[in-house]
Image 1 (cartoon, rainbow, N blue to C red):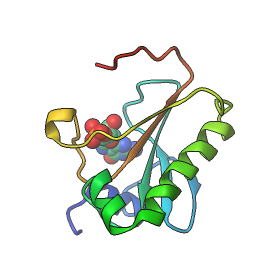
Image 2 (spheres, rainbow, N blue to C red):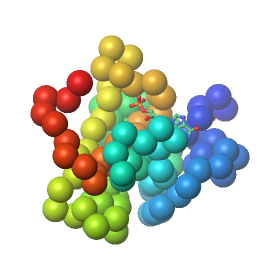
Image 3 (cartoon, rainbow, N blue to C red):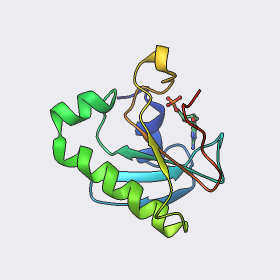
Image 4 (cartoon, protein in one colour):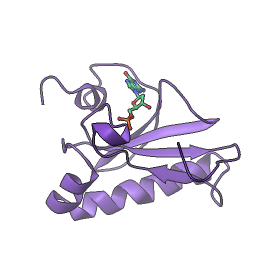
Length: 113
Ligand code: DGP
């Protein structure tokens, strides 16, 4: 997708602090962190949201979660972290390239806002 921000980060056309990569995923720090650890895990291929990725490429969908767990462990939060997919503008999705938020390092209230 020519106009997709996260496709450009995956391609290295826009800088980001990449913390982990796998065959199918890239993990980089969120530019507006909401916790001491706030990393976004994205598929290298473009899918608009989590459901589209799960339908179109279930193995990569699972790899996103494995990558998120590896990031949480690497950052010292392997036992306590939160994974979030905002899906749809009404739920707070602002970038329409699937991304899994990994949040850790502070008390995380429930329910989320
Ligand atoms: P969401 O609201 O769930 O679509 O999350 C999008 C996230 O993307 C948001 O937490 C901020 C982050 N973000 C937006 N633009 C950039 C960027 O250029 N670089 C990085 N690293 N993160 C970005």
